[in-house]
Amino acid sequence: MPKCTINGKEVEVKDGQTIMEAFKKADEPIAHYCYHPGLSVAGVCRLCICDIEGNPRPQIACNTTVTEGMKVSTKSDKVKEGVKWVLDFHLINHPLDCPICDQAGECGLQEQYMAFGKYEPEMAEKKVKKHKVVDLGPTVVLDSERCILCSRCVRFTEEVSKTNELGIFNRGDRSEIGCVEGKSLDNKYSLNTVDICPVGALTSKDFRFKQRVWYLKDSDTVCNGCSTGCNVKVYFNKEGMFRVKPVHNEQVNGYWMCDEGRNIYQFANKENRFEKGIKKLGGASLETMLPGALAKELHQLVKSGKDQTAVVLTGQYTSEEYDSFIGTLSKEFGIKKVYHWNQNEKQMGDFDGLLIRGDKNPNTKGLLKVFEKHQIKTEWQDLEKSLESKSIKNLIVAGPENLSVFADMDSKLALFSKAENLIWLGAAKVEALTSDSGKVKNKNIFVIPLKSFVEKEGTFVNHSGLEQKFKKATTILHETLTLTEVAILFAGKNLTLPSAVEKPAFVESQRRSDQVQLEHRKKNEFVFKRGTL
Image (cartoon, rainbow, N blue to C red):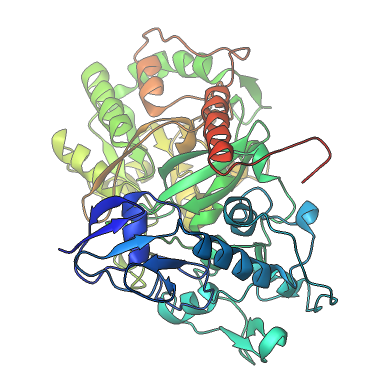
């Protein structure tokens, strides 16, 4: 493993690694656009120039391999001046539309200029005008004037998604990114091109103009869209959740995530959830109450009918919740009729070769491990027969949070309707449970709203058996419960529940995020004044 010196710091790197990677390992800043660790080296932006001792001219760091004893520096006046000239070149035709650009606040171009630029522009000619608001496909919009032709998006469609929709067309300052004739940017990973775009050229249709990034806080968590368990960052404020982006984890998802996973934030927002506990007796009008009060009220119903009670669980909850829920119901009431609401077995093993898996639950493996721990050995067919014969009167269902991936929802609700009392636990709003359409015909229906995955901490076990712990990101609905809390209340025990006037959990996240942003600004010598950009 060769050793080199980066701006006076001695660093040891792996054989074959580049100077760029050595800079990253040494935690030394270096200007760059086209380089991305998840893509091949293009070497087109020429921004990562550096001095190598013994070389007469500066070299680019992204495409130069480290050799033993190499001494590299970006501190010389020659390199600093060179970087400024390259930045000037990139900005020659760039539009001054930062106030309306979605990338403002997290733009690589802004950050590079503040860190390595700050020059006096010398361009006197008019800027070249290019196409604006180009509809590339169902998810992405292109503003060609902002594009600096780093080719990251083109390389992504060639090397990662392997769909080859994008290319660079025309020559010189007329060159533009665009779709190959007859194609549109329509693949299941298209929004990764937005993530890796270092400027605001590619923007997400879903997020476009919804929020300024400096109004958003963020927190790391695990995607609950399928059993891959991608590491992600969720972005939110007091208004709700707004987007999801991937976090690098070489063992799980690399640098990427699928477009389906980016929609999981929608199921955590208020408009898609029950906010109050609901009680509907004998088909009468709905009565709403606090979720905790309703759960405690159901103690007697579960206790008196424990021999005629069954539980249905989906693989969308944490391992800790499964353990406490099954353990409490078994210990307090002796309930062992616990069933796994699984998807179509044929789809469970599906895999697209990159990230998307047929099992659309984040914790199927965790649920099965808890089943094994508590010696639960039930078959779904037994539940169907028991509901048909009316030997099960009380059915407790911990429903899916992500309703869009459960195509069999209507058929399952029809099955569950055969129980006299349906106790539905879930974060997602299921309209059929409260509508008068007659789809759900239980004599009595009880709905207890649960916390979404961003409102709690716990563990998901992915398809390979990897346990991934995650922390609570924020609180959107304060009165909702976890499965653990529901089990305690079902058992008739007291529980300290959060009040509606309690300080929102996102306040602490905001404080931490504000501190990070402040440090980031200081590091890049940002100066913000009222009325200026």
